[in-house]
Length: 328
Ligand code: PBG
Ligand code: ZN
Image (tube, rainbow, N blue to C red; front, side, top):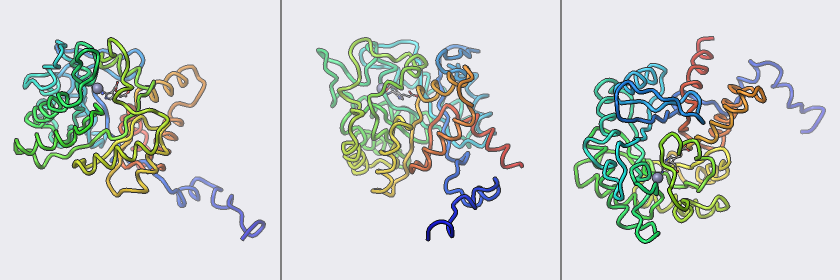
Protein backbone atom coordinates (compact mmCIF):
# COMPACT_ATOMS: atom_id res chain seq x y z
CA UNK A 1 0.00 0.00 0.00
CA UNK A 2 1.48 3.29 -1.04
CA UNK A 3 1.01 6.97 -0.37
CA UNK A 4 -1.41 8.54 0.52
CA UNK A 5 -2.81 5.54 2.41
CA UNK A 6 0.58 4.76 3.88
CA UNK A 7 2.39 7.47 5.77
CA UNK A 8 5.35 6.20 7.76
CA UNK A 9 5.56 9.53 9.55
CA UNK A 10 2.37 8.76 11.51
CA UNK A 11 4.19 6.62 14.05
CA UNK A 12 7.04 9.09 14.40
CA UNK A 13 4.84 11.89 15.73
CA UNK A 14 5.90 11.95 19.40
CA UNK A 15 8.49 10.27 21.57
CA UNK A 16 5.73 8.04 22.89
CA UNK A 17 4.80 6.87 19.39
CA UNK A 18 8.44 6.26 18.65
CA UNK A 19 9.00 4.35 21.87
CA UNK A 20 6.17 1.97 20.96
CA UNK A 21 7.67 0.95 17.62
CA UNK A 22 11.36 1.12 18.54
CA UNK A 23 13.08 -2.02 17.26
CA UNK A 24 16.34 -1.81 19.17
CA UNK A 25 17.17 -0.81 22.71
CA UNK A 26 20.44 -0.71 24.56
CA UNK A 27 20.25 -2.19 28.05
CA UNK A 28 22.70 -1.78 30.91
CA UNK A 29 22.88 -5.60 30.91
CA UNK A 30 24.54 -5.46 27.48
CA UNK A 31 27.52 -3.42 28.64
CA UNK A 32 31.03 -4.47 29.62
CA UNK A 33 33.48 -1.89 31.02
CA UNK A 34 37.24 -2.17 30.35
CA UNK A 35 39.64 -1.43 33.23
CA UNK A 36 43.41 -0.88 33.20
CA UNK A 37 45.24 -2.03 36.30
CA UNK A 38 48.70 -0.99 37.32
CA UNK A 39 51.13 -1.72 40.18
CA UNK A 40 51.52 0.60 43.14
CA UNK A 41 49.12 2.22 45.58
CA UNK A 42 46.68 5.07 45.26
CA UNK A 43 47.36 5.49 41.55
CA UNK A 44 44.67 7.00 39.35
CA UNK A 45 46.35 8.19 36.17
CA UNK A 46 44.07 9.57 33.47
CA UNK A 47 44.85 8.35 29.95
CA UNK A 48 45.55 11.36 27.72
CA UNK A 49 43.80 10.15 24.62
CA UNK A 50 40.93 8.58 26.59
CA UNK A 51 39.45 11.31 28.82
CA UNK A 52 37.52 9.79 31.74
CA UNK A 53 39.50 6.52 31.64
CA UNK A 54 42.26 5.77 34.12
CA UNK A 55 45.10 3.42 34.92
CA UNK A 56 44.17 2.30 38.42
CA UNK A 57 46.19 0.56 41.10
CA UNK A 58 44.68 -2.58 42.63
CA UNK A 59 43.61 -0.78 45.83
CA UNK A 60 41.54 1.71 43.79
CA UNK A 61 40.18 -0.87 41.36
CA UNK A 62 37.86 -2.29 44.00
CA UNK A 63 36.10 1.05 44.62
CA UNK A 64 35.74 1.45 40.88
CA UNK A 65 34.34 -2.09 40.60
CA UNK A 66 31.79 -1.30 43.30
CA UNK A 67 30.66 1.82 41.43
CA UNK A 68 30.35 -0.14 38.17
CA UNK A 69 28.31 -2.84 39.85
CA UNK A 70 26.01 -0.32 41.57
CA UNK A 71 25.30 1.18 38.14
CA UNK A 72 24.04 -2.28 37.11
CA UNK A 73 26.82 -3.07 34.65
CA UNK A 74 27.25 -6.85 34.82
CA UNK A 75 30.92 -7.24 33.90
CA UNK A 76 34.35 -5.67 33.52
CA UNK A 77 37.26 -6.74 31.34
CA UNK A 78 40.73 -6.35 32.83
CA UNK A 79 43.96 -5.26 31.16
CA UNK A 80 47.25 -5.21 33.06
CA UNK A 81 50.25 -2.92 32.98
CA UNK A 82 53.06 -5.09 34.38
CA UNK A 83 56.01 -3.93 36.47
CA UNK A 84 58.40 -5.71 34.20
CA UNK A 85 58.30 -6.77 30.53
CA UNK A 86 60.42 -9.55 29.02
CA UNK A 87 60.76 -11.85 26.01
CA UNK A 88 58.38 -14.47 27.39
CA UNK A 89 55.76 -12.22 28.98
CA UNK A 90 56.36 -13.74 32.42
CA UNK A 91 54.00 -11.49 34.36
CA UNK A 92 51.11 -12.53 32.11
CA UNK A 93 50.98 -15.94 33.83
CA UNK A 94 52.51 -15.19 37.21
CA UNK A 95 50.30 -15.87 40.22
CA UNK A 96 51.30 -12.46 41.58
CA UNK A 97 50.76 -10.53 38.35
CA UNK A 98 48.87 -7.27 38.45
CA UNK A 99 45.79 -8.74 36.75
CA UNK A 100 45.78 -11.78 39.03
CA UNK A 101 45.88 -9.44 42.06
CA UNK A 102 43.09 -7.30 40.63
CA UNK A 103 40.88 -10.34 39.94
CA UNK A 104 41.23 -11.49 43.56
CA UNK A 105 40.59 -8.02 44.94
CA UNK A 106 37.44 -7.52 42.84
CA UNK A 107 36.04 -10.99 43.51
CA UNK A 108 36.64 -10.52 47.25
CA UNK A 109 34.92 -7.15 47.44
CA UNK A 110 32.29 -7.21 44.66
CA UNK A 111 31.61 -10.91 44.00
CA UNK A 112 28.49 -10.29 41.89
CA UNK A 113 30.46 -8.36 39.27
CA UNK A 114 31.73 -10.73 36.56
CA UNK A 115 35.43 -10.45 35.84
CA UNK A 116 36.44 -11.09 32.25
CA UNK A 117 40.16 -11.16 31.55
CA UNK A 118 41.84 -10.23 28.30
CA UNK A 119 44.31 -12.99 27.53
CA UNK A 120 47.20 -11.73 25.45
CA UNK A 121 50.93 -11.24 25.75
CA UNK A 122 51.51 -7.81 24.17
CA UNK A 123 51.32 -5.85 27.43
CA UNK A 124 53.88 -8.19 29.02
CA UNK A 125 56.38 -8.63 26.18
CA UNK A 126 59.41 -6.33 25.91
CA UNK A 127 58.85 -6.15 22.13
CA UNK A 128 55.13 -5.44 22.47
CA UNK A 129 53.91 -8.19 20.14
CA UNK A 130 51.02 -10.53 20.99
CA UNK A 131 53.18 -13.63 20.60
CA UNK A 132 56.64 -15.12 21.00
CA UNK A 133 59.10 -13.47 18.59
CA UNK A 134 62.07 -15.33 17.12
CA UNK A 135 64.21 -13.90 14.31
CA UNK A 136 61.60 -11.29 13.56
CA UNK A 137 58.77 -13.82 13.22
CA UNK A 138 55.80 -14.13 15.55
CA UNK A 139 55.62 -17.82 16.35
CA UNK A 140 52.16 -19.33 16.65
CA UNK A 141 52.49 -22.64 18.44
CA UNK A 142 54.82 -21.62 21.29
CA UNK A 143 52.53 -18.62 21.84
CA UNK A 144 49.34 -20.62 22.33
CA UNK A 145 51.02 -22.65 25.08
CA UNK A 146 51.79 -19.43 26.97
CA UNK A 147 48.25 -18.16 26.40
CA UNK A 148 46.87 -21.34 27.94
CA UNK A 149 49.13 -20.78 30.97
CA UNK A 150 47.91 -17.20 31.23
CA UNK A 151 44.26 -18.28 31.03
CA UNK A 152 44.74 -20.91 33.74
CA UNK A 153 46.47 -18.41 36.03
CA UNK A 154 43.55 -15.99 35.57
CA UNK A 155 41.07 -18.76 36.34
CA UNK A 156 43.06 -19.72 39.45
CA UNK A 157 42.86 -16.11 40.62
CA UNK A 158 39.08 -16.23 40.20
CA UNK A 159 38.33 -14.94 36.68
CA UNK A 160 34.78 -15.67 35.51
CA UNK A 161 35.28 -15.50 31.72
CA UNK A 162 38.43 -15.80 29.60
CA UNK A 163 38.78 -13.58 26.53
CA UNK A 164 41.77 -14.30 24.25
CA UNK A 165 42.66 -11.32 21.99
CA UNK A 166 45.91 -12.46 20.41
CA UNK A 167 44.61 -13.82 17.05
CA UNK A 168 46.95 -16.85 17.03
CA UNK A 169 45.58 -19.94 15.28
CA UNK A 170 44.39 -22.68 17.59
CA UNK A 171 44.43 -20.64 20.78
CA UNK A 172 40.85 -21.53 21.74
CA UNK A 173 41.72 -25.24 21.57
CA UNK A 174 44.85 -24.66 23.64
CA UNK A 175 43.07 -22.53 26.25
CA UNK A 176 40.04 -24.84 26.50
CA UNK A 177 42.40 -27.79 26.98
CA UNK A 178 44.45 -25.95 29.59
CA UNK A 179 41.40 -24.85 31.55
CA UNK A 180 39.74 -28.28 31.46
CA UNK A 181 42.89 -30.05 32.61
CA UNK A 182 43.03 -27.81 35.69
CA UNK A 183 39.37 -28.29 36.61
CA UNK A 184 38.06 -25.07 35.04
CA UNK A 185 35.73 -26.74 32.56
CA UNK A 186 32.95 -24.42 33.80
CA UNK A 187 34.76 -21.21 32.76
CA UNK A 188 33.48 -19.79 29.45
CA UNK A 189 35.65 -18.48 26.62
CA UNK A 190 34.76 -15.21 24.89
CA UNK A 191 36.98 -15.31 21.85
CA UNK A 192 38.08 -12.18 19.98
CA UNK A 193 37.30 -14.16 16.83
CA UNK A 194 37.34 -11.38 14.24
CA UNK A 195 39.89 -8.87 15.42
CA UNK A 196 41.10 -6.53 12.73
CA UNK A 197 44.49 -4.81 12.37
CA UNK A 198 43.00 -1.39 13.07
CA UNK A 199 44.28 2.13 13.47
CA UNK A 200 41.57 2.60 16.07
CA UNK A 201 43.61 0.85 18.80
CA UNK A 202 46.00 3.83 19.16
CA UNK A 203 44.68 5.25 22.44
CA UNK A 204 44.50 1.76 24.00
CA UNK A 205 48.18 1.24 23.32
CA UNK A 206 48.89 4.44 25.28
CA UNK A 207 46.67 3.16 28.07
CA UNK A 208 48.14 -0.35 28.19
CA UNK A 209 51.64 0.70 27.15
CA UNK A 210 51.62 -2.07 24.54
CA UNK A 211 52.74 -0.50 21.25
CA UNK A 212 54.92 -2.96 19.29
CA UNK A 213 58.56 -1.80 19.32
CA UNK A 214 58.97 -2.78 15.67
CA UNK A 215 56.67 -3.72 12.84
CA UNK A 216 52.92 -4.05 13.29
CA UNK A 217 50.26 -6.68 14.02
CA UNK A 218 49.19 -7.38 10.43
CA UNK A 219 50.68 -10.87 10.37
CA UNK A 220 48.17 -12.01 12.99
CA UNK A 221 45.26 -9.53 13.16
CA UNK A 222 42.84 -9.49 10.23
CA UNK A 223 42.95 -7.35 7.11
CA UNK A 224 40.17 -4.72 7.36
CA UNK A 225 39.26 -5.51 3.75
CA UNK A 226 38.08 -9.04 4.55
CA UNK A 227 34.61 -10.20 5.57
CA UNK A 228 34.44 -13.84 4.45
CA UNK A 229 37.64 -14.56 6.32
CA UNK A 230 35.98 -13.29 9.50
CA UNK A 231 33.33 -15.96 9.09
CA UNK A 232 36.05 -18.62 8.80
CA UNK A 233 37.64 -17.28 11.99
CA UNK A 234 34.33 -17.45 13.79
CA UNK A 235 33.52 -20.90 12.46
CA UNK A 236 36.89 -22.26 13.63
CA UNK A 237 36.62 -20.64 17.06
CA UNK A 238 33.16 -22.14 17.56
CA UNK A 239 34.48 -25.56 16.55
CA UNK A 240 37.36 -25.12 19.00
CA UNK A 241 34.92 -24.44 21.82
CA UNK A 242 34.33 -20.69 22.04
CA UNK A 243 31.19 -19.91 24.06
CA UNK A 244 30.86 -16.39 22.69
CA UNK A 245 32.59 -14.61 19.83
CA UNK A 246 33.69 -11.01 19.46
CA UNK A 247 34.09 -8.57 16.60
CA UNK A 248 36.58 -5.75 17.05
CA UNK A 249 36.45 -2.79 16.35
CA UNK A 250 32.70 -2.23 16.27
CA UNK A 251 31.42 0.74 14.29
CA UNK A 252 33.39 0.15 11.08
CA UNK A 253 32.60 -3.57 11.22
CA UNK A 254 28.84 -3.66 11.68
CA UNK A 255 28.50 -5.74 8.50
CA UNK A 256 30.65 -8.42 10.10
CA UNK A 257 28.50 -8.47 13.25
CA UNK A 258 25.39 -8.74 11.10
CA UNK A 259 26.74 -11.62 9.00
CA UNK A 260 27.83 -13.59 12.07
CA UNK A 261 24.44 -13.10 13.68
CA UNK A 262 22.66 -14.33 10.55
CA UNK A 263 24.72 -17.51 10.42
CA UNK A 264 25.11 -18.61 14.05
CA UNK A 265 23.09 -18.62 17.25
CA UNK A 266 26.12 -18.02 19.46
CA UNK A 267 26.19 -14.81 21.56
CA UNK A 268 28.09 -12.06 19.74
CA UNK A 269 30.05 -9.32 21.47
CA UNK A 270 31.37 -6.17 19.82
CA UNK A 271 34.32 -4.19 21.14
CA UNK A 272 33.81 -0.51 20.57
CA UNK A 273 37.50 0.30 20.83
CA UNK A 274 39.57 3.13 22.25
CA UNK A 275 39.75 5.03 18.95
CA UNK A 276 35.96 5.03 18.62
CA UNK A 277 35.72 6.48 22.12
CA UNK A 278 38.49 9.01 21.50
CA UNK A 279 36.89 10.31 18.29
CA UNK A 280 33.57 10.95 20.01
CA UNK A 281 35.22 12.52 23.06
CA UNK A 282 37.45 14.77 20.94
CA UNK A 283 34.68 16.03 18.67
CA UNK A 284 32.43 16.46 21.70
CA UNK A 285 35.03 18.56 23.50
CA UNK A 286 35.46 20.76 20.46
CA UNK A 287 31.72 21.29 20.45
CA UNK A 288 31.47 19.74 17.00
CA UNK A 289 29.04 16.96 17.97
CA UNK A 290 26.65 16.28 20.83
CA UNK A 291 28.71 13.68 22.66
CA UNK A 292 26.07 11.78 24.61
CA UNK A 293 23.66 11.73 21.68
CA UNK A 294 26.36 10.27 19.40
CA UNK A 295 27.35 7.81 22.14
CA UNK A 296 23.80 6.41 22.29
CA UNK A 297 23.46 6.42 18.50
CA UNK A 298 26.64 4.38 18.12
CA UNK A 299 25.72 1.92 20.86
CA UNK A 300 22.25 1.49 19.34
CA UNK A 301 23.72 0.85 15.89
CA UNK A 302 26.01 -1.84 17.29
CA UNK A 303 23.02 -3.58 18.85
CA UNK A 304 20.93 -3.11 15.72
CA UNK A 305 23.66 -4.85 13.72
CA UNK A 306 23.20 -7.88 15.99
CA UNK A 307 25.58 -7.58 18.93
CA UNK A 308 24.33 -9.02 22.22
CA UNK A 309 27.12 -7.47 24.27
CA UNK A 310 29.13 -4.29 23.87
CA UNK A 311 32.55 -3.69 25.39
CA UNK A 312 32.76 0.08 25.67
CA UNK A 313 34.59 2.84 27.52
CA UNK A 314 31.20 4.59 27.52
CA UNK A 315 29.64 1.87 29.70
CA UNK A 316 29.42 4.01 32.84
CA UNK A 317 28.15 7.12 31.06
CA UNK A 318 25.63 5.07 29.09
CA UNK A 319 24.44 3.29 32.24
CA UNK A 320 23.90 6.62 34.03
CA UNK A 321 21.92 7.92 31.07
CA UNK A 322 19.85 4.72 30.77
CA UNK A 323 19.07 4.70 34.51
CA UNK A 324 17.82 8.28 34.26
CA UNK A 325 15.49 7.22 31.47
CA UNK A 326 14.10 4.28 33.46
CA UNK A 327 13.15 6.55 36.36
CA UNK A 328 11.20 8.97 34.14
C1 PBG B 1 45.63 -6.65 23.04
C2 PBG B 1 44.40 -5.82 22.88
C3 PBG B 1 44.26 -4.63 22.14
C4 PBG B 1 42.96 -4.18 22.38
C5 PBG B 1 42.35 -5.11 23.20
N1 PBG B 1 43.26 -6.13 23.48
C6 PBG B 1 45.22 -3.82 21.39
C7 PBG B 1 45.94 -4.30 20.23
O1 PBG B 1 45.63 -5.31 19.60
O2 PBG B 1 46.92 -3.62 19.96
C8 PBG B 1 42.39 -2.90 21.82
C9 PBG B 1 41.31 -2.28 22.62
C10 PBG B 1 41.02 -0.87 22.29
O3 PBG B 1 41.59 -0.24 21.37
O4 PBG B 1 40.16 -0.33 22.98
N2 PBG B 1 45.78 -7.67 22.16
ZN1 ZN C 1 47.91 -8.49 22.20
